[in-house]
Picture (cartoon, rainbow, N blue to C red):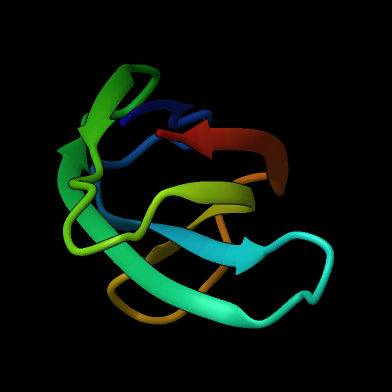
Length: 84
């Protein structure tokens, strides 16, 4: 899966993008996948968040990014995904 983030700050930052997979309708966390990148000041970065070991089914996947210092740097994005 790919996610894109924009760095609006005047300095580079290392960011970890999380994808939290919850089953529908139970809401049980099935997996947490991560991808990381350095984002230059005023730049976009694409994150590849791998999908491993997730069973077929319907999930709500929540994406969010944090710096390596654990500061949130993105809005939360939720998407519904069905794997077959």
